[in-house]
Amino acid sequence: MPYLKCETGLRARLLLEDGEAIEGCGFGAQGMRVGEIVFSTSMTGYTEALTDPSYAGQILIWTHPMVGCYGIPTKTHSYCDVPLNYESDHVQVEGFIVAELPPPNHYLSIYDLNTWLAKSNVPGMYRVDTRALVKKIRERGVMMGILAVFNEKDVIEWNVLEKELRNAERYDTKDFTYKVSPKTVIIHEPLTKPIATISVLDCGLKYGILRWLLRYGFKVVRFPCWAKPDQLLNGFQGVVISNGPGNPALLVNQIKTVREVAESGIPVLGICLGMQLLSLAFGAKTYKLRYGHRGPNKGVVDVITGRSYITTQNHGYAVDESSLDDAGFMLWFKNIDDKSVEGVIHMKLPIVATQFHPEGGPGPHDTTWVFELLKKMVLNHGNS
Image (cartoon, rainbow, N blue to C red):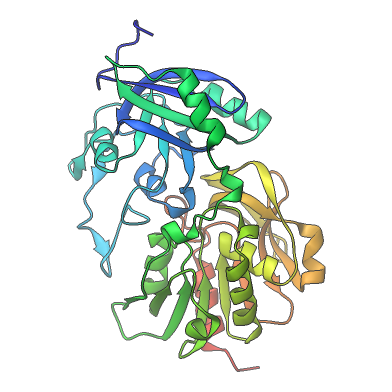
């Protein structure tokens, strides 16, 4: 595409598994990355999304046309030493695709998006019809793809990309939790005297969840995703099963751990992947959504109260509603659009779980009261 002017001096090629080939301009790091092609309907919050561990293994399309306007914020702004505007300490996506890449204009910006992705060794693509790409995914479902970014004086041939894509491991068959989980135990103290100490089975915990737990006065101890049940239980008053990337059915060891933890009777909150693991642990089933729920504008309804909420969501799998009863769960929240399960409550044990993200990050705070519910469960545990 010699007529395409790329201010970055980089070109990009995207090859989808159905054979569609797309050319555009490149930014960020040079190189090739394979991943599942997904999209987010967010307008802002790209720093949060790009650092969200749940996006590991995926190439993210941003539907809003202008991305990068406010640059990349500093990490010096934090709560309890947990950075604001970030969901982990580094970029998690395999690649980033946007329509246009304007220069940033914000007094807190320390980098532009191009520089940040280059420093993070993640390729990006712009000057692409993202609306057409998203329409394709909505109609045909998510699919694998390969993104290549290279100097405009060079070229990476399509047959090279096709071979790399054909030989790559599929997203559905890969366990990403070991990549995004902490390697050691990490302790976080709230600003005031802790109301209780809770453990987290960290399969890719978002900083936003951590900040809200700290705001509610919990001392938080994060364990790697391979932690044993006794580690999560001994000395703790509650357990959180975190969000994370990938196919929940692959996490056999975590499912066993979650079952043992939950059956102990300790209060448990599951979020996103955490809800799927809890459901699988008690015998429910999960399935892959056609194109997933990713964005801060997803409506859910509380089937118990009839109230509706706008939530942030980022998941490609869902729990099969027909399998809930036999697993001992009752439906709590339902997606307004496709009627999929967005929350469950165990009928006998102190377990609640949401498929959406109650912390937002980015997005609305309509459902941060879920953390208040966890607080009440922990403080009232053992009472009638």
